[in-house]
Image 1 (spheres, rainbow, N blue to C red):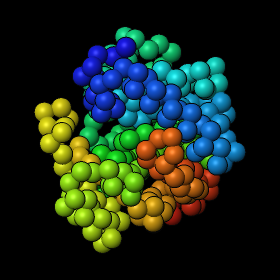
Image 2: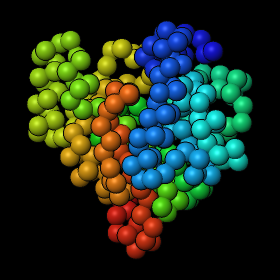
Image 3: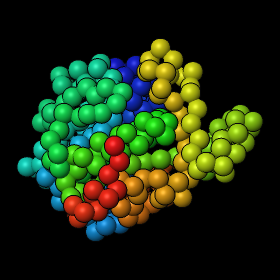
Image 4: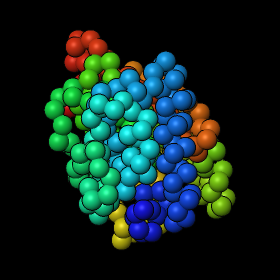
Length: 242
């Protein structure tokens, strides 16, 4: 079991059972709800990347849900979390990623990326850079499952003025980004709290991937964008951004 500080940094919770349950629930939701919307399952993919793996919240369950021969990769900005995963969760390869790309993977080498609670902490510029990098590494026809927060998550914020300010930003721009004192001294200053409208995701992220579905929050508290890598090399060039 990861130590308490790593559990909190990865999932915002210190409770052991809550941490374990949240990982199991997330993997099941991404498999049975998000991938199922494309008539796919985790067992269909040969190379899976847990992008933003933390201390293995999803990885603990991921191996049993994937094909036994699938290559599982994991990366995170937190060196301590990656060190713990290397020492305690076998049968996966690990890397620490920097603030900006690249990732240490070949072009078109990954056929499924899980980005659970990653784009919920990045501003628009960071998001577009990372979408471009995921576009580079995902195989044509491969998928990215990226979660994001919308109305239900905002309603849970206790500060009414903050809620209203976020909704106002979403009305104007479709995205609202806030720096957060909660992560001060733990993560870099650019790691904040981000909210999106589904319409923003459809409009902005489709420059990099086909947005197949937006799966509403259910057993996990975030919506999930089911993104598919375009198979046409012409379309990839057309939508590629520097």
